[in-house]
Image (tube, rainbow, N blue to C red; front, side):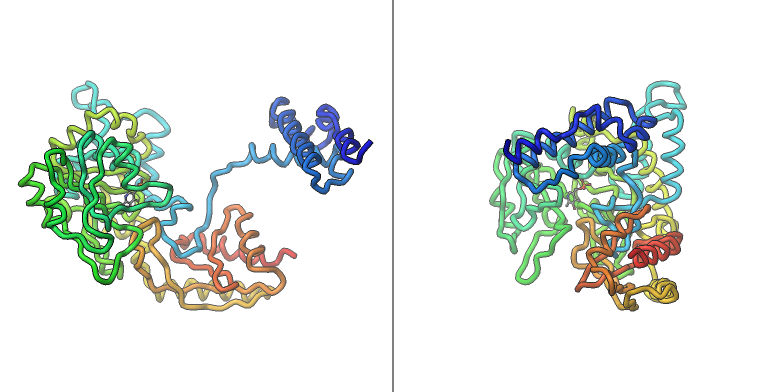
Length: 468
Ligand SMILES: *Cc1c(COP(=O)(O)O)cnc(C)c1O
């Protein structure tokens, strides 16, 4: 018998493994089928490793060890997978970390709607069927100056709905400098194709003129589309045609002028050192017929796609079957309504919307928080060099790619473990901590850390550096 055959023969039976203690304990929390399936999976994995002649020892095939591995995979079922992370990366709208944290009133509104029934589609005045979108329509038209508004579950959906409802089977003209790809495989040309539109590219990557748009218009043209280059900048010898110059052209040819703003600012944030970007109201005022933007980028609300514009166009979208497929759920709607209401008074939004508070954080105050953290770490006498350094926080989330916010960070250079090991340990805590590894050091930036998390973060850093 070859060594290989011998190993295969030594794989324990499922029943035998199930009698081992780690799985017996789990039997109180999981049904028998789940445990058996986990053991079978582990056995299958071992068999494949043996056949692939991976180096396995007889020890790996001991029932107790097989049981341990199966139990580990069962525990994944029992523990929350989606959980809290302290964001010490200095990137405020981190797409992988869930973009914008919500304001208190948004959280409260979600809870109210989630725990019972609501007037989601019930008109309390008449007692008749109501309209889901009515809850945010007035706020959105008030804040944007547009005639009408509609919301769907994200901005990609908003773009798809607008293009499909307004241009299916026809052409949309877009500048080559604006054929944007957003992370997560959202590409303007692909969205066009999905919506059944023909893309007509005009201009070059760096320069597009009004004349280029003009020349591209034909009997089959439906839309002039502008896309905000929210995650890159073309600099140098450049020219783009602003919406206000495209508006008369669209009018003249009876076309829809649409702009995908991406982030969608409701307030001018340039006073905080952010790139000057047009607000949604300014874009509407410039004569754009349909504007789309995200709920969870600079707006600081839940994931949603917001559409504002001319009534007859919005009405076409409301009636399109895609609107139903992309419809916003009640929890999101509740959070969005509460967030938008904060914007009725800009000062209130700046105070209460977490992402806006982070933008407006005073660097001197950030430095103070970092200094406190540094003192905590120094007092713990850890095997690490720790320093206070100047750092930069970024907007992230595919918004304002060149904006740098002056900030501070605590730099940690562990002496007994590698930086990679330290970062990995931090991700293992509850809550997990995400920090930045830069130049072989760990950088802890507090711009996106809530002050209420500072103490917990200090404890976690100390514990991670104390583990041997
Ligand atoms: C982010 C972004 C999108 C996608 O928005 P989601 O809300 O993430 O779906 C589309 N267009 C632009 C220009 C963007 O910046």
